[in-house]
Image (cartoon, rainbow, N blue to C red; front, side):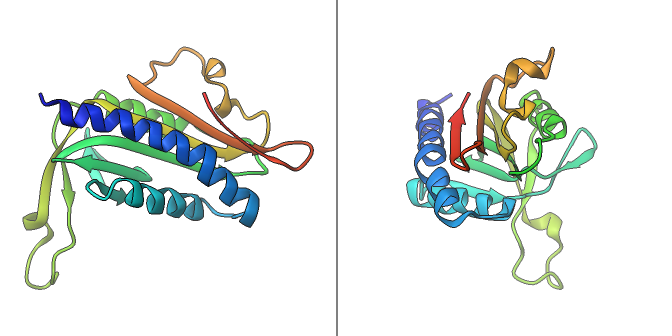
Length: 188
């Protein structure tokens, strides 16, 4: 095992925290974006700028334990998955987080290869199976749940999640609009 991916994961973690606190929060305050896609686009754009050597995947679909999985953002380096992000954006409602958390937990314990497909030049000429690349999920893969919801959402407080085995390298990011109509973005 090389140190390169581990070092990259630590710098990735720091950069995601910086983006959440300094970029996403400011973007939300200035534009008042209304959709999860906007949150996803902001994160994708800034991750690409910060880490041009990483592959940033938006909603790739792959099979895990016999069912299709589609994380919101997947980050890879050298055929290894080093980051997985699940996003929820519903600022005026309480966040429902259980399915996204289960997805992260399932991926954290998955130790087989996953096959990610790159779009072929021509679907008519080449079947999709010929364009699948095998990736492994790193043991210390960064698992991120990022949500913007109503103040007081249980999704913001990991202690309210009950008896769950959180992924090994888990990070919970959240944001809300307070009673003074100001945006608050935090990391727990």
